[in-house]
Image (cartoon, rainbow, N blue to C red; front, side, top):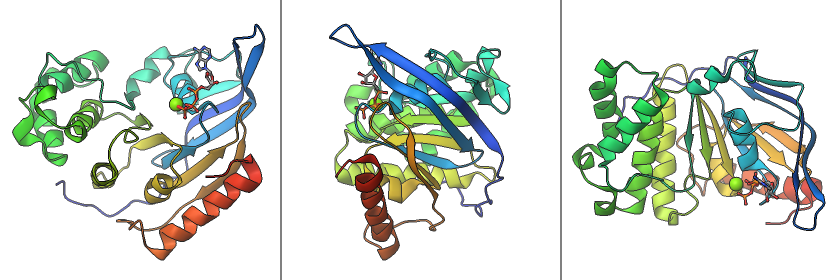
Length: 273
Ligand SMILES: Nc1ncnc2c1ncn2[C@@H]1O[C@H](COP(=O)(O)OP(=O)(O)OP(=O)(O)O)[C@@H](O)[C@H]1O
Ligand SMILES: [Mg+2]
């Protein structure tokens, strides 16, 4: 594993700022479904921000807007480091995306898949590729499997390779959309530990925006929790979390936080878990 460094205090700078987001989609009955009606969201630089919300509230859509994959109907701001993504589409090259499933190319080895990520984003000089691959495959415990094909490794190992494919770019912002939700709980717990170790190992933390509807996962990972209501979604609860790592799922602090989040969901979003 990578050597741990001391956690740096969050800088307090804004990394991502969305202001007055408006978005609707046509629905099946010929009407429109409002997803956001003036949503504002700020994400702090170096935070591990967890977006928590019920299915269909627009979590994945928010990541897609941040990555420039989707344009809202309108927005006053979609700022990355103070610059608007709509004027500077190249800013999306600072970001990498991890999806729910690994989405590896099955005819390429894990290493070739990661290399595909490096080539795709094009931010790392080619002479650094071998060092980066070695470093991050080692960090997730996959050094011995770099040259295996996806079909030759487990689902959890494939998802680790998908994290490497994103992390080798050393993105300033890592967008993660329920990356562990299809894994069994033991594998998911291991993956969370690996992810937090990777994130903490760097003196200046990357900004992670992690989507989940799993309250326990949010309590285990977040430095910042943002809770969304059902669509048209608004932020109904937000809080910082300064519990130390590693966080044990059954520790009093984590269980208390879960309880608080469950209560907030019920009272403010009308959603029971
Ligand atoms: N391209 C699209 N066309 C039409 N409707 C869409 C499109 N993309 C998303 N939606 C709708 O927007 C809403 C929000 O979708 P989104 O995928 O962001 O939800 P989510 O919070 O990620 O849900 P889940 O937890 O189930 O993944 C949903 O009602 C979805 O059906
Ligand atoms: Mg989603």
